[in-house]
Image (cartoon, rainbow, N blue to C red; front, side, top):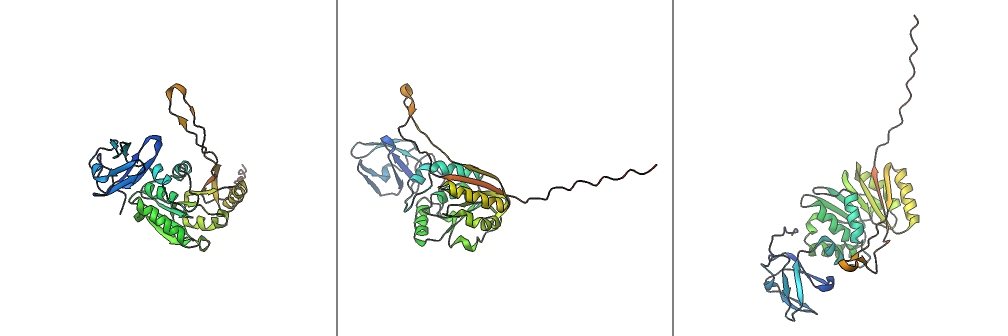
Amino acid sequence: MSLPLYDSHARAGDLAQLLSTGHRFFLLRLTPGEVLHTHKGVVRHDDLIGLSWGTEIYSHLGTPFYLLRPSLADLLKETRRNTQIMFPKDIGFVLVSLSIGPGQTVVEAGTGSGALTTALAFAVGREGQVISYERRAEMQRLARRNLRRVGLEDRVTFKLRDIAEGFDEREADALFLDVPNPEDYIPQAREALKTGGFFGSLVPTTNQVSRLVAALQANDFAFIDVCEVLLRYYKPVPERLRPTDRMVAHTGYLIFARPVIPAPPPQPETPVAAEEA
């Protein structure tokens, strides 16, 4: 099953979001005859199917909800996890920095719970493909369930293997490493990428950044960028607009680079002696 295109009205089979005050939300696949039970009351799927997106509805207890299409950020926040997942703020920056778009072939190592995998699959579209490597079978099973839940599993090829053995792919448009020691796999990544493609990685410490940058430089990668993404929300109260009390600050270092083919510098031309008159 692939992610459906949304109409102006909610249909059976759509992935929907019920959003209440305080931004608390529930995700559900609209199914005739099903019922959503929450601590704020019961909502029947049949009462939602056919409504315009954005409609306010009420549970049997009178609690208001809005029927909305879930954003990609909402889907990522609801990823079922066994380990820490990448934050949406980092994932969004990764997508634009690696220039991920429809029809591309993207390789990922370190599937984890599948949060980044979900975003990559969303971005490459129906004609693209994501190849995701993971060496832990239990994590791969969890990622498969998460991708299946949002209707994107058919865009991902899962491979259970240690990337020390190398990647099967060649000429990939982009490659991302989310593994403990990415500097050990740069030759393998270089071989899988097309020249001029896009490389990215996430590491938690500055020592790892230094080792990774050195490995990239030693394997003909150029235009290396190192950055972090800090996100601050503001309270949307016009009379006293100010930042929220907490912010999502440092969550990791992002490293981006491009594989290139260096050329030797040109040799100076030997001057031609002037002919004697």
